Length: 139
Image (cartoon, rainbow, N blue to C red):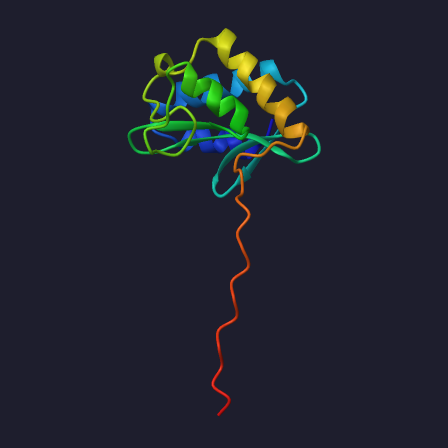
């Protein structure tokens, strides 16, 4: 465990601390080899090879948790967990009760790690056609 993540949780709003601790504990239960780091001023969970599996964040009135595998996001959407435009896979989390059941969350975290290790990413990048060069006046 990374001491910077401990500090991040300690600085979070009181309502957010149990949420962040629960997410952190669940990720470590699902993936004992997971590594923690701070990127973009928030905690991230990565594979031993450094591939991002998930992240969590605390804000003034809610928390977020994001799984970085698009296939897992689709499963959550099908189960009724949809991001409401806020950061993260589960939308705005204001209590531990807003999280999926531990059994489901453990399963999804494991699947996200396997998908990320297999090369799946959060973003499905679209191939774009090369832009034509602009015409330049010869003068």
